[in-house]
Length: 108
Image (cartoon, rainbow, N blue to C red; front, side):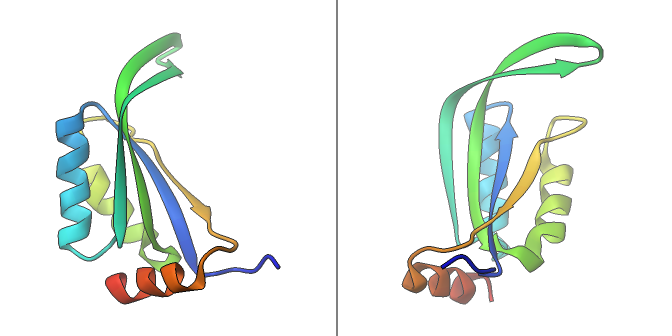
């Protein structure tokens, strides 16, 4: 059954592993995320300033409550080196209830 769990996965790309770790630590220290996965070596292709560009980036996969997305966005924008950082939240529509309850506990 699909329902609104009140939890989201937030994707953020960072310019380096170091920047990704810095952002992950900020989110965890402020209890805005229960868990952050860091995936190094992501190859991104995108349009920027009217031209096709590419970058080697690190991806943060952030598990949190939907209500915290505005605060996460503020923290990421302040800590990020990009003018327009990618911050995309996607709803979690199901999963392990124990895990989703844990996300609530850790970000509550």
